Amino acid sequence: MHNTPELLGLQMRHLIVLAQRDLYNFSEARNPYMNAERTLQRLRETLFSIQAVGEQLTRQHAVSQLSNQTPASVFLGHPAIPPITPTPPLQFYQQNLRDLTVEELATFDGKNGRPAYVAVNGVVYDVTNNRAWAAATHFALTAGKDHSGAFASCHAGQESILTTLPVAGRLV
Amino acid sequence: MEGYILPPETLTNEAIASRLKNEVNEQIRQGLIKKRNLVYLELNGCSGNIISLLNGQNPDFEYTLNSMVNLRYSNSLMAAEGEQAIEQLMEVLDEDYILAVEGAVALKNDGLYNVIGRWKGEPFTGLQAAQMLGEKASHILAVGACATHGGVSAAKPNPSESVGLQTVLPDRNIIKLTGCPVNPDWFLGTLAHILLYGEPETDNLNRPLMFYSTLIHDRCPRRPFFDRGIFAEKLGDKTCLFKLGCRGPVTRVDCPTRQWNGHVNWPVGASTPCIGCASFGFPDAMEPFVSYDTTRIVQDE
Image (tube, rainbow over all chains, first blue to last red; front, side):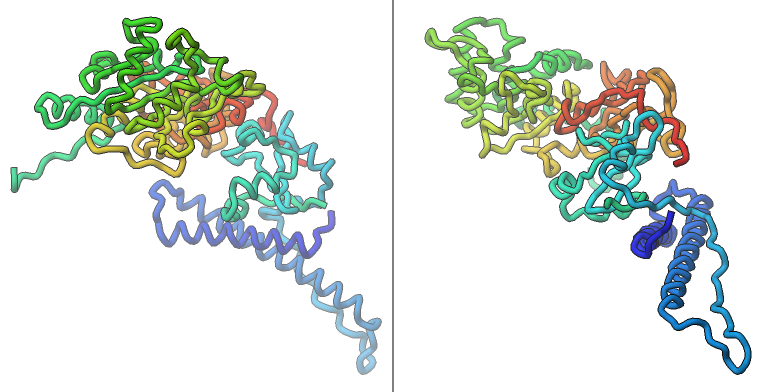
């Protein structure tokens, strides 16, 4: 599975929102039931993931730059120093981002142990464990479909709901 | 009394409703407020709400109701029958009254799918009653899911073309007590609030905040199981019922703390998922009520 820069960017944005939320919880200490240790651990993992996604982006950028350049030349009799390769990305919190067609999306209907995905405005979200999606259904909507229209009519101006959902990929 | 610091009043759900009821009785006894007339209409439904209300206790529902208001008309509770009963209903029209409506309004064939009596030899439909009484009432309470949005009566395929009360009274402010059926406290508490202070504070869907402000999920005694991802696999399991289709996370009402049948138990307490009966859209939008074929075993893709 090749992660396009666009998908990586999407994932990065999601991770940053997660981190911001955890930081907010910490700084305000509003929630007396917050498990500090677990939140800290999640924050740590989110940061690792941000680092990993960032490195993937850098590497892809470097590869695209390299392909634009002329073949490696010889500099003063020495072979050109190869570009620094980033360390392999850490696998913390790494999701399988993928491009899904409508037909593929339909298989993620939350039945028989399959995950429950829904698409809104071209982005596929994972609602498997979302509390408003008990039994992979939500106010007569079922998982495995594009619900952009329903979202617009019921949650207009509440796009923040989407930022709390794990991104599973993109609808193509 | 000045200078004394009184102990705080109990703020439990049960206390709020019973304090309202006791306060009304006390003020009526002292002559500070007057009893108002109440018309309780039963339209197109199953009479489940009046049955649920009869479950109210300490003191019993009928006593509570009669000591708070003059119950002028109720399909189920009044002694009069036939045209005589409808005559009593018509007499109220010239007076001040609070209207409570249970059941949906059937629109098909000019309302002939729901006839509640006969008036001057003609069938008297629920549609006529709702419009006639709704226009003149000082306050209107829609009691139960059928009255608030159509509920079970308007579920697909809706052969009687039933609608909620608001559809036939578009210009009236209607307090909506959702639920299938309503808890006696939700009805009596709201009624007492109207007598004492006027209409209670409501949310954007016109439900009284004192009963409908919290999500069931947020006060569910099984919430720790949800947070730790421990889910029930079948009805009767004692863990979180989310994966079976529990609608607690989208349903706003105080069932977990108020409970039913004289504050004894409630659906999740009996190990069956919340079916979201107090949500708008019930029942169609809350289905499936139970699903065994869901995301229990999450396989790695």
